[in-house]
Image 1 (spheres, rainbow, N blue to C red):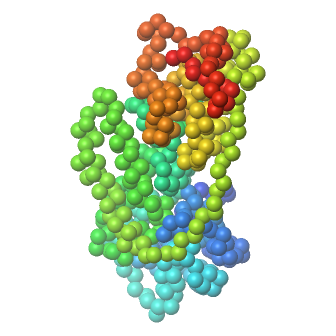
Image 2 (cartoon, rainbow, N blue to C red; image 1 turned 60 degrees about the vertical axis):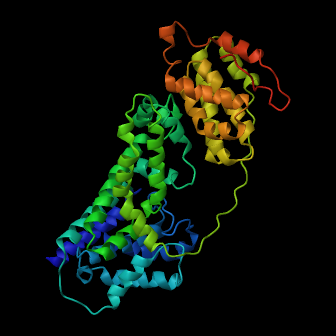
Image 3 (cartoon, rainbow, N blue to C red; image 1 turned 180 degrees about the vertical axis):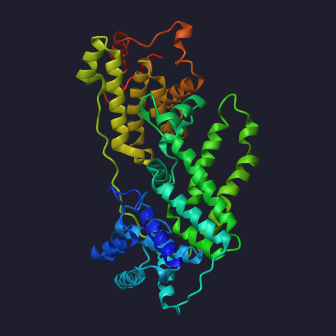
Length: 451
């Protein structure tokens, strides 16, 4: 019975680490280990970059070497939980060979935490034991963690959300998604605001569910400290728990600024209690396990080169506006704006060329607003408003950007029909562009559009 269960358990572990898989069918555990040896995955570890104590998490561990490390870690956790009996598995000796070869290839590997892999090797050096015992809580907790790992790996949107959280700066999409309850709802629905990609709020919500489940698992293992610390080591997707906590803390802070939202619902006491329940044990355990490790300095990234987009000299835009095809012109501008974001990314937020780039973006946003895409304009400029206000508060650019965000929050422009107003016509937009006041330090198309 134990051999049958162990075989099924190890195969299940192998399936979990292969999620998501490009193949239509996942391999058995025996085939998984065979392939790891044939492809010499151990030699690939030096190609893995490190930027956290527990090793960088690639979102879904598509790198074969990381999947092998994850597999070994889960087998070790299964042994600690009494979930499986190693020597009852038919591939045990092959696994032992692959582990020893891995360590021979990487005698002093410090790029990724191999604590669980090393602990698994020790089991092969220990005297054989025929006993089969497990604690009910430990067994169930490992089963729950294995199921959680599979669900997390299969949720591509949550993996992307986690990768966005790895930096020190608040992701740009958060500023736009949290402008107001209306914008938040749009971001929750499909991760966009009037076609502008922003934070996938729904993915963040699901991540909280995963984190709550992990917190429950860790809480249930208070008496099983070795298994609990092993799970924290293995859960590399949450290796920067304090950054995830701080990101959601930013969400709460911005939600408090919404009108008609009860301050009681987002009080410091309630959020602190929730954050402590979800992140308290996890962060404390990570800090305890975070022994000093070598830091690999990332390669220097050159400042992005700003490509000029001359709005007033864009012939295609001019023709669309002259023909009164405002919808098509709006679509073109939105495409240009999203190209700016895609090319520059969030790196521009800290770049020395930030201000001229911000002027470009704000000018483009103001034209979009005049065409009726007020929410899209606000979503584009919201991430840059904090730096604009802090460093360039007296500039027209900062004022215009703040006005776009303020208008979108209050919903004034969205309800133009109630005030008998209409979006700007193509003729009006062209006239605004033609009447711009040139400034020597600006590119030719930057303008002061009529509000």
